[in-house]
Image (cartoon, rainbow, N blue to C red; front, side, top):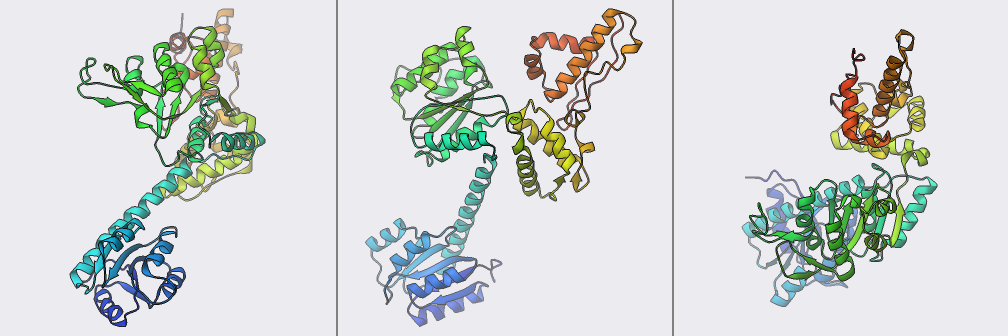
Length: 472
């Protein structure tokens, strides 16, 4: 039965009979065959031919290069094919050296048909996995790419490249949605620890009673629900980088343990007396003013000074408005590639409106709105009228019903309602963020929403708010 796999195979062997024998086997099975009589010719054919996935390579060949030297040259190439070594005088030492240099398998002459075909099938599967992994890695790198040509971004990149090769602790500060995680990943990617783990922890998303277990691990039975031993994030990141996002939300007790890791390189599991040493590069991020948190006694000043070795500022989107067209194009292209969508453009007036908009949610808000528009807009070009009304700049605190009110209280209520609606739109209908923005407790904002009949209904990242003033 012929193989459905139409792979291209290159045979490099100085014996014509071996090449002839392999040609009969492989062409019958549906493979495309290329041949070379020595190492130099083989490398030339590999460079000239597109899509070679398997190389069958003899070890002993005449000329300036033997098989092991050719193998090393092949493995230096990006997306290199799998190499199966063949030899009539194989030794264990030669096989070990070939394997260390990247050979997939080692076959001895005389070659047997079934063994050759099995080796090629296995090598093709391995080659496919490696290519998929490389593609996934490239996609991941693209996903975490820092985009921008503004002077603030150029300054940030320079600081990243300076700090990355060191082991210095880095504190990234800036508003929510500005891409602090991307900065942390860029530091790791340009560091000497790039081949080791990058472990991310969102300190704000983990309940206070579980944060210590998450960071440092726990022993079985150390607390209710601890049914098995757990390795903490610091140990998972040993040799690599740990990124503590929203570090300002960490409890004082946990802060003291993090300080110990920074100063002594020591971690202690919850419920254990044993101390383990770790070698971890620490990067932290916060959208809070840690100096103010220290004044409020919510953050340890000794930990702050230990974290603030290399401070990096993540600029808000409104500070680098010139980068908005670049970001729009980047997100459009990525979304189209990932979802097999037709590439869409934004009209000049739409881009102009987006440049003027203050972007309280920063790059995260921009990305969400672009994806929503790409999904919900049928046209090839997205125009200003397609943008959400807050981005178009059409919603203001309008007091459009002011002429209808009869009392001062009604007027105040109407003004407050319009103010809250405007702020909700500015903050992408995020209750917590809006409460912080207008400096009121979240519980109070919920009461106001109920009072004014403002209902927020999620739907493709959008919210609908409507209702008349409550009758007294």
